[in-house]
Length: 506
Image (cartoon, helix red, strand yellow):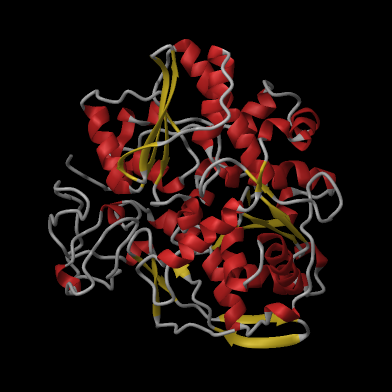
């Protein structure tokens, strides 16, 4: 397998913040010790980003950015498009416009404490756990569990040149060869998130409270809403946790009890298509201070894992095909499934169909999207006898999010629900896996291949998943229990300028 060129500095594509290369001291692979592997999955040091630009216009709007600048000069910022920017490749670095996404996770938004926590979201920490497990002091051993996001699987299928089921088995074989004990996919957790979102929407509709409801699965969107938009938006955000964080609860709460482990004796890593999932994992509400344990201890992107394989010169053909593990049963070749949606978990489609039935007694088999501004800003309507009963929208990418926010400020939003994702094209197009080998721009051919691979999976409604029904009873003590509300929901609140040091004029 060909190893791509690796520069001395890689970049955090969603925020213009640099990753810094860190040496990965030692890792065992099939009996061979690899010294000083230098993978490009490095510590994020967002607090070191210093933007010397003054009130430059954002790539995607004409508003001015008043964020405080350090004046120490311009660090090496990403020179290609970010999120959905179309920065000309020929533009000199110092003259390039500040992208809206640069206002989300730069030093003004990420505190030193957060930066320190995020710095642990790298392969060094995983190597530390693996190395610790090989030592004689069993008191420091941890069971290493990896959860792979459903939208990451198409990436490995394309890169391996295999269909998704076989690529998943090969990925599982690779992870277990490193010393990982269990490998899950996150479809079950996504099912919980969808079901809870459905129920919450219907309740809000009945109460006519805080509509439109915005989906909450995208951490880039959530961070922007809390840090920049504040109380205009936060009451409207669905309280259901994202699939990643529900998976964290499922592993650290339910699975540890089944294995008779304390949560701090289990190290939980997630493979995700998006860098912003690292930020989500270090949120305070997902940390158990009594046990000094996070629901998700580490997030690596799909690209980081694949580049590790290339650094280690792994041959996919030589890897064992190992089936995924399952939370409720022994490992085995259960069919991989997906939820509705083109490249994400399909919250809009699932909630739309559920609400049509629950609120109006209508069964919707197919959903017809109407494209508005572009393919990433679409709407769907439910009509009866010429009357519009429901009107939902999908809004992907910050250019379209800006349009949505402007309409909300002027009171011109006709929607009851909006599925919001920060990455154009949805989660399959996440910048942790969709960029070309040279970095920067999205590899459109790769994205198309991933979308085709993802669509090849069979769709399964979470409502019909018997494992979810079992877990609701055995783990959560029922759908409406206090335990279910605590583990499957959270709250999103406005962050004050003093907390974030971010000041944006709209």
